[in-house]
Length: 341
Image 1 (cartoon, rainbow, N blue to C red):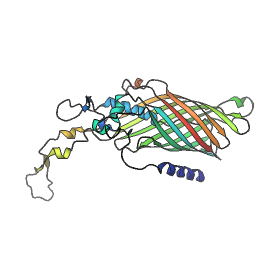
Image 2: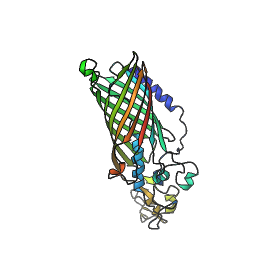
Image 3: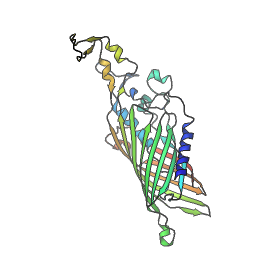
Image 4: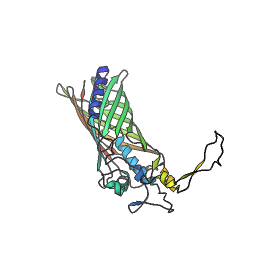
């Protein structure tokens, strides 16, 4: 176990090394841009400089982004066993509604997009790569840890899972035809943005059956169902980042009455406009349930393991009462390459 954890740590260092710079990338989410609009400008219903927040855009972008963050089901039901571990690189490609207004309005885009307050060229897919370590434990348990990077963003993903093999390893008699069955609980979270937090727990049911091909090769078809809970929470967001609240407030005056007592603090008040303080807001908490079907395979030759799985929605996301109309179904294609030692 010590050697496997050391290998996992070295792999994370290798993944982190090429990343540099602190500037926002094109597909970074910008909640400050999620305002209701009149043309290219934020809507100002009362004419007082306080912009209208677009809650439906927040729900749409978090529903799709949470789906992309959900941990893929990329292995069969059988565990690695107590004596072995798996270390692999998993790359997921997730479909986005790139034509949706909430993606155009709610992501950073290129430098010119900063002037327009919208992303002119939204990616049609979100691609992320994870390093995944799995280690078998006693009683049919398997612990998993993952760390990943979402391309064209500044975000990192971190995950953990625990799989319980209900049936595995039957090899003789009629029982040899019984497939392996397991249940996996996972949680995935995101770092790299101070405007929101996003956590995605999931529960998987997976059925698989290793098929021996020759003396050193094994093909394992995979069939599974995954239940995903998207939990998104907004921090304080400034809908008017180009305005200076402090400057608009103007000079401060002391309304304490000139008291000389040392414990009396002054009571400052604005002499200018305070309307821009109304642009400090928080989007409503979002809790969305999504379910998806998973089909795929793993191919193992000696220590090398390759695989592919595809995930797609069993029902429309808009069937959830918290998701606005027009948020379409998505798919997730995950490719795997790793070693089992």
